[in-house]
Image 1 (cartoon, one colour):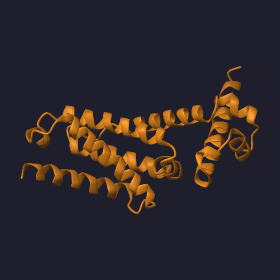
Image 2 (cartoon, one colour; image 1 turned 90 degrees about the vertical axis):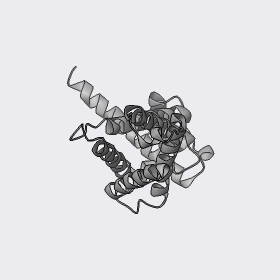
Image 3 (cartoon, one colour; image 1 turned 60 degrees about the vertical axis):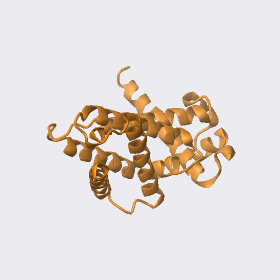
Length: 199
């Protein structure tokens, strides 16, 4: 019995991966309104009954894909820094790892984040980035932004919107910069921007 469980789990994971890839391929080709369960199943080379063993319908599939995306990103964002006392190192390392994760899964992210046809993914990522920026702002008691008197919610809106906007533009432009270079540029930009607030 125990020997069969891993095999079943692998089969389920493989089928879901096939369905996900089929959906992403179809999103690149046609409007979402023209995508049916039949088309996804046909592209994934499975029957439509198998689709319904995993998902209720296409919106349910997108909801579960968005959940998986956020779960993957959360594990990247929770990475421990090499030196916990260096806040800048942690921020930079987390940003590099996030961008590396996006680059490794570029086809998926390019389709779901740079398309206005699937707002669930962008909305979920924006929420996650807002939570991350909020944690960063609340943990930095002596920040330049606080000294300048800028409201916390405005900092969060600005920071999360700037990050998601940069990530989407990077994807739409076929990732012309490495994750490490982009993270370094963003860190430098944020430091200079923060200094400019007080000048």
